[in-house]
Length: 303
Image (cartoon, rainbow, N blue to C red; front, top):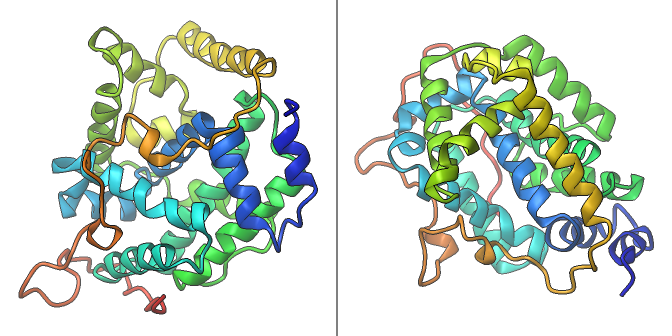
């Protein structure tokens, strides 16, 4: 297999009809580590939106049980990409996601912002640090893939193009990024979890490295101090250098599965998709977290 195998394979497919296959080739074969990092940073950006960060903090799940929440998120998002949206496991995973979201008062604009981060942040990461940028077909496939996911989740007004997603994300962050104590607690808990992914001598440098990769608006919204300029330059240069070196590596034949990621640690004996995530508190009807200024989210269709 030539080093350009997956790029050539994706170019031979239709970005709309074959969006799931193209997206899975990107995630599992061509850029598994990069996509994992990019999607982690995509979720991290959502903590800087007070409505999202505050809700995640008040549930207690992303501070008191952060490893399981991290794992559940990865495991629930995996089946549609790996198996397609019509597979029973994928339908069960999306149903679980919808059940969790419907338990809380989440407005459509916040759901749409999270969806936009999954489209835009990976492309920008690979533009900066990947062994190559995504092709036009791969970007289009990502748009169609997440438009399909958004439809299954009942998200309204989803953009039809990458430019639309990018514009929505940039405008939304300009208007909504702000400091919130709850969002900061969730961010701190996530950074602390990330430090455990590495050997102890590397834990503190890993936290500094993560802050070095944040852009200034994100750091300001979370009130994180910027690392020294040389640390930021060195960190970004190291990632760019990694991308250059990877151009000489052989193509990945076997897909990198979520189960292969050592950071996923909550289910050493396997998991049942229908038991992942959170469940409503017995005896509590409606959103268990009070929000006087947040409208109730529209109901998502059963999947």
